[in-house]
Length: 382
Image (cartoon, rainbow, N blue to C red; front, side, top):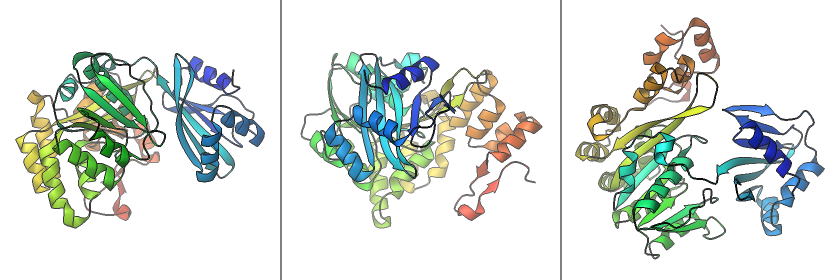
């Protein structure tokens, strides 16, 4: 058994989600959003280099030594799999390991809005699942792919870095490709998917212009494309897609996105008020004629009104989802305030000491169209 497995067992037994290793630091875990040390002794060069090289092939280790970063997946046993990132940092080697459950939870078990299932039933277009790192995007997407796999006969191609959830063929055929092991890059994998008789393509990261352009083109040609972005809500998601293109192409891209966008699922995790884990909250945008017109016009500030008015179509505004968790007692006023878009709506629920904590944590509001220097604290302003 590899030496590092002892640390993984400690992570699993503690109920943590991530293991953090850094040369010169004690090993640490993330548990319910907090990072905690699991021993006092720091990791030496000898210990961490032995641990990391032991579970990594010689070819991958050489690539890590040359580039300073490496992503792959490590399977400790049939029940425990990890997404791995090796890195070099100021004090030497480092690594972060994220637990990937081997059993894929259903959408019902995750408690996400039921309208998300309808995105899996579509025959073409693009659906964007967004949120910050660690917000559960991969878990939600895996559950949606499994829903399709159980209920429909499709060919699903996933392009991931690395492969996280491993799917077994049910009614559908699932081809999972890892960057750079099976495809050199996300754009290369997307181009190949167009020749692989795919019905559905899942793009693990839409991080550059070429990937986004190819994803939009694939959606226009009739594929159902699922992609992820690190944005917090629907408006920012649409803006990010458009803004990645040069200004002289943005009008054309708005037209393409207006025609092909089927929906946006934005996701955040809130710490539970009782400290026992976190709960997912979602903003849901379902594209309709009003949404298409707004995107074509470039008037994304109007999307919030459409989402709030679209409850009957399954839409949900992020602040309303956070509000429901606050009212039900699942989330504390401080947590709801920190994650909300409209801080004023949640400010009255903050006790004075909580307000001070929020101010110390740097709760800022960015003024539309203004730069970093014009950000100002929300709390305590007149």
